[in-house]
Image (cartoon, rainbow, N blue to C red; front, side, top):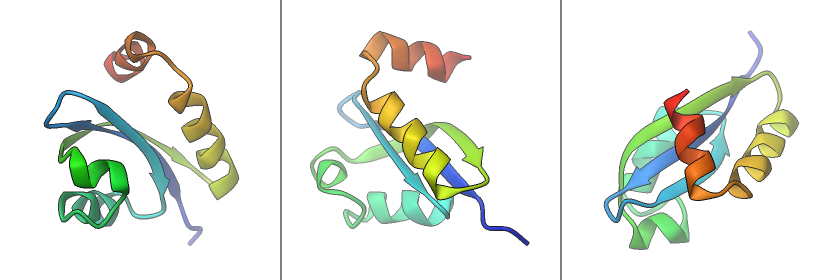
Amino acid sequence: MRKKYFTYILLTEHDTFYCGYTDNLEKRFHLHCEGKGAKYTRANKPVKIVYSKEFDNKSDAMKEEFRIKHLTRDEKIKLINN
């Protein structure tokens, strides 16, 4: 079985978004919630995963993360709602 990768967006308690990539979405979300996932999510506690997309390789997941991080807030909301 091939490893899957995910690009994801979290909604935080301060109504902001955090974007990242991982090979284990649930585990990564729990790490963020415990304050062990990223510096940003230590200060902005995640509430829920609002978007995720699956990829067959790490490179594509990282490219999508990079693309999303350069979107405006409105563009991120549009992506989440589609």
